Structures are given as C-alpha cells and as structure tokens.
Length: 250
Image 1 (tube, rainbow, N blue to C red):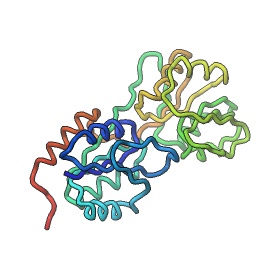
Image 2 (cartoon, one colour; image 1 turned 180 degrees about the horizontal axis):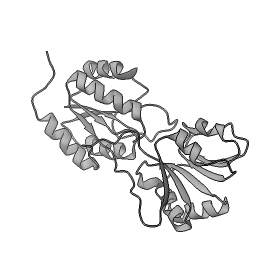
Image 3 (cartoon, rainbow, N blue to C red; image 1 turned 90 degrees about the vertical axis):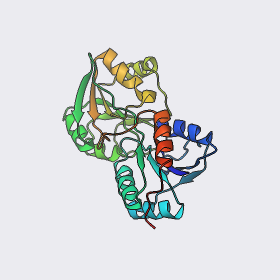
Image 4 (cartoon, helix red, strand yellow; image 1 turned 135 degrees about the vertical axis):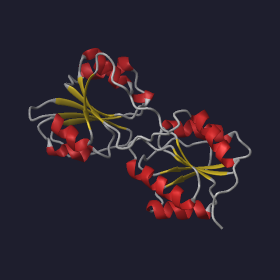
C-alpha cells in the first residue's frame, strides 16, 4: 500500500514514525516548504507544492497512491481544500489527522475572531503592547496598525515592516512558566494567537489565563467534522482503507 502524508502539524511526524515501522506500507511525507528548516521525518520526504488540486491529483496518479492523509496545520486552508478535491478526483480515501481546537476554560479572556483582519481591528486604536504568536506568514496584516508595539516569535527569520517591534527566533515547545515570565518582562497587554490546538504552544494560553490577559483568538478557517485526532487511530484507518479493493477507475 502506498500512502502520501501531507505534513505540517506535529501529529504528522508521529504518524510517520508509525508508518516507518510497517513493512506493508510505502509512505511519503510532503511538506509545502514554508518552514525553512523542517524536522526530517523517518520516511521519504518531498518538499514543495504540487501546483494546486490538479497537480496533486496528477501526483497521486503518477505515484499510484492508495491513501491520502491530510496532516497539515489546521490553518493550511488551501492545502486542505486541494487535498479534498484531489482525493475525490482520484477516487482514493482521504484521511484527515487534525488535533482538536483549544476550548475556552474558566479564567480565559478570549476575543474570538474569524480572521487576521478582524484580529487587527480587535486591537483597537489605542497603543498596546502586543504578543503576535501567529508565525511569520500573516504578519503583514498588522502593518496597518503601526500604533502598537509588537513582540514577534517565529521559527524562521523575519523582517517585519513595523515601527516598534522585537523579534524572537525560537521553536517550541514553550512551557507556561517561561511564557509567563516573557509576558511580564515585555509588559504585554494582549496576545494574538491562532487556535492551532497544539500542546507545544499552549503555554502562552495558560500564562495569559494566569495573568488575566486578553487573547484575541483567531478561529480555524476549516474544522473537519470526521477528523482523527490521534496518529494511532489514523494508522488504523489507513490499514482499513488499504485492505479494501482498489476504488480507482481503469
């Protein structure tokens, strides 16, 4: 059985480890290439886009892929859309591996917004010290609000066009105690975060709860209804789908 895993979330790496231990599965991991130094998985890796849904469908046919797994970041909306389209065109199973979103708990001061433009608006006109915990790809949205100071943390180097900012280069996980110290030291007023659901970066949410800081929480653009939340469960689905007769047309 040949399996293509579209990676990006940490769960993809855990699934890759399980797949690497199977002699009956040939698995390939694909990264979009947005992170410059991704952690190499224990299965063959390709880096780069496919050229949209058409390109992905062509790749699935050329490589005779039997099962497609979408284990991308919860905010990789376009890639997930392409995966759904390509799997349907190729008549092969699509398994979605996605961690659950964080849920608001007692003490949280969340301001939930649908997108980054709304997050910018939620900051208001008054100058604030903002922790932008959103990665590097969507920083440009905040260039329209230069009245704020921005603390930015990114895995990859960034050169944001902000008048007042500080950049921290770091890769998680980040524990809550360290996050609390960071928020205090930088005198942060508000956090902007994406609801990734990742335990590796939940420390900032817990720290904000402790400090009673507001969090502008950007909701997921797409949340799959039938997603698997566990790599072992996803492997079981792969094996069950792979055991069925091939669905492709001749």
